[in-house]
Length: 447
Image (cartoon, rainbow, N blue to C red; front, side, top):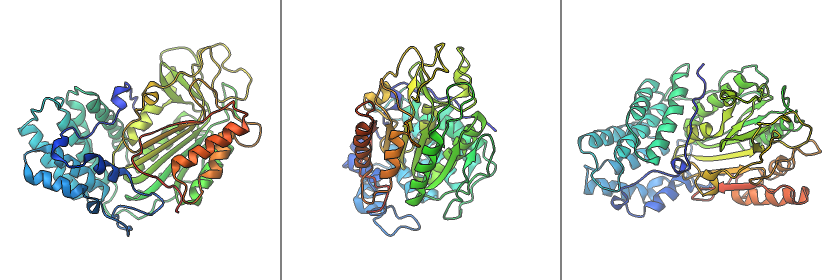
């Protein structure tokens, strides 16, 4: 089994980077609101096979793009935009056809607009067609397109971000046992809770419209201080998500191999989900400005290879980065520098004790997540420590599991309630923190 590739992004590379030839499209911002503005609880939806609500075209985005293509059929960018819409509507053959034409046009007539970075359109076209091939289950052609994406010289942050996604997706499809059939079943088979290094069968493939969650709680650390509550936190959050209809992959006390496998399986299946949610409770560290999640068997020793045994947050984000899906990432872990003698020191915080505390992640603090349609929440603010708690759950996860299933509560309002409850429970010692690039209201539980 391949391991998740390491993806390093600068803050600029994590910024949203899609349409650059906005002149061809009317009300482009509204188009992307459409792409991410559905009510996930079921009030608005795409015309998926099981949907009974508003198709995308009724909002005008598809009509606008069709008009742009009619006005100038030699421009590849509107075709790329329509490729994304077809993928969101699960019309994969149409997406592939538009992506193929966009690639041909970008090769035959490279954009001359000075505002368009060299090769950016071609990289975007290959990436979108690869995602369509992957969703269809044609892994061979998806791999060809991901390799083509990586072979092109990227000259701008957006293209480099596309290549980071291509790098992770290529690793995932290369490791896949078999292509996903086009007529995949309408629901995934839930994954049993996974503990330790034991492996479980991969779930059946999801179809577009599925809401999926990856939930991991690590507490039984072998070489640093153990945390009693993360397994309880993971179980509580997983139950809350299942109760509102999520298909949950759940893991407790995972070593490196098991954590890699579960993460890879989830990223692979999430390619065809409508909403992907990641929840992690346990130890986390920040090293050189990058955030890492810690398996239970990791030994934190100084050296260049130390981070290879961890799961980098940027890699998960790159694997999920796709404008047709809403991503919610929730981390109940402190992130600080572990390079200190007292890595096994006593205490009830979720950071590995070190000489320096948490530095604010610049990519998030500046307002840049990984793209429109993403929300990232941390159990504590930059520079602070997430508490494990004195009861059966951490203060953050206890509040989160209570509010996740509240009907009709928009996700950011839900996190506001969680924040207020945590601040009160910890007597102002812990203030949860979040960053969002969502362009519409997202409801996890039906109104």
